[in-house]
Image (cartoon, rainbow, N blue to C red; front, side):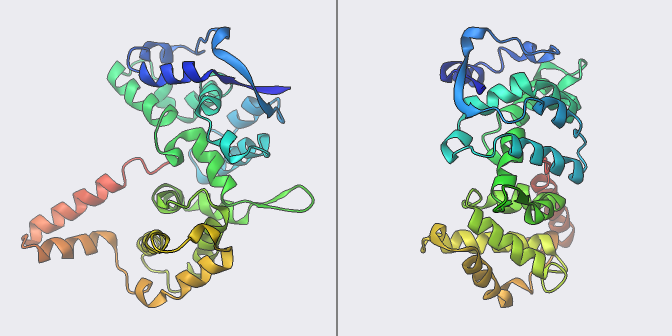
Length: 285
């Protein structure tokens, strides 16, 4: 059996007319005319995908990890092109996994929500232009870029589990890299983080891994990093230890920068706090 998807035209209409169609998202089932659905060339591996994923709708990292594994293993042979096909993910989110979406994000099923707030919630989780923040695509790609396929057809999820257990690595860390869909780059970074999390990457692990992303992106501007192996990424980051180790808390660094610009102690403290709050908004996948 082949996986169904939305037609390209209908998917585009959904995006373009979201605000006008927001009332449709108040229903327990998202009504779609059969003429807007076609078969893809993707095989259906798990006929119980919705049921399996609905057993893991908590925002707890372990549960999110389990849901992501189920989704990935349902489509293990997707090509990069298929995995980037928006009508594929939009169909799953609006039809087969619509109930999962509403269980995972209860705000989507809140009948007391204003149209404006519902629009914001639907746009965030169904249509987010950032792949990593689009719920289903985000789950899939975080697994795809970190899992290690084994010869027996199973998977080693060591890196993946670590990635999900440090949520901001996916949202503002790995997800912020222009190479986050490149498994070798991602695995090299994750192995480095795992090896030194309890070493020189602590304290201020988050800030130091943010800096690692900057280093990778900067290097990518002058070198073909997409051709590097996992070990190359690991050794590159290790070679910058002297730069990474002294990095301090984000808020403190922002405060120092603002003080250097002439702000008072109180104003710099308030502005730094506000900047951190803005950065940390919507940190969940």
